Length: 324
Image 1 (cartoon, one colour):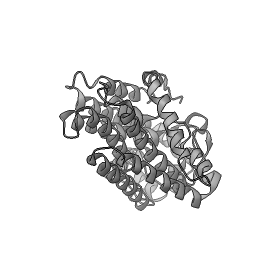
Image 2 (cartoon, one colour):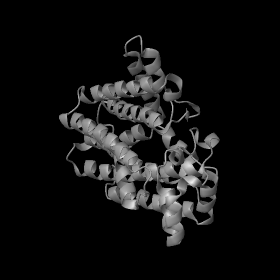
Image 3 (spheres, one colour):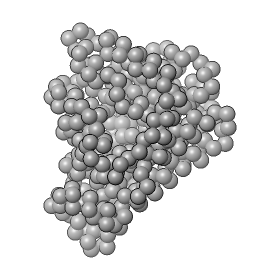
Image 4 (tube, rainbow, N blue to C red):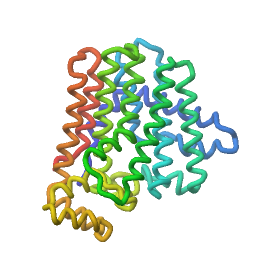
């Protein structure tokens, strides 16, 4: 199944100037590290990826009644938090490939990768504190804690069946919290941290974060490495029960589901993928995904004059999911 991103790419083009300037700013952040680790830091921070979280920052602050540099710093902070979390994720998942390149873990080993992730987290905290309102600093600290707790919850859930409620709790921690924070950063600069727009944008960000993690989990089962640009099947190898597995177990007859749940590792990824296809699992996952995107749209629907770019983001991310 070929995943189409043309609509998302068109949306991202509307922020081409912002993202170009952000990339230059991020390169300068790498140059601020000690000379002995600057090369490794630059490898971690070099321009790549979709810049989803910075795009949410920009989309939540559409009127430009602010210093572009101030918004850029906020966008950089959220992107660096994301990059640091990816470095740690790849160590946890023993992943060799991300964005069509060797992971930091593969290049430098687990010990260096973990420490680089820690250093980038710390640098992101510095950007969050520097010149920003106290609520930005406190929220940045809280989101790093929440991200870490989400990963811990997922690790504790390994080797046991995960129900939908537990899954949602995990992905709200490990992914949705950062999408929510990105929307807060833009919306609070636009209208203030306690404004109705900031509250609505955060609600939309949280729903979009849940949706995007679902998309990522589906990709792990239904996309080749040549399409996704990262190591495929890491969820299966790591024994994570993500949305496709949860829906498969719910779809099968009770006796068959219970047997499969106890013996997942005795099946190959190819066998499980075939079972998912035969039982319409990917279609059901896509429907759940679209419901999350619709929650995001509903959260910001009444904010005409502020919501246009964030609604465009919703449409763009919706188009990333194929029609099963």
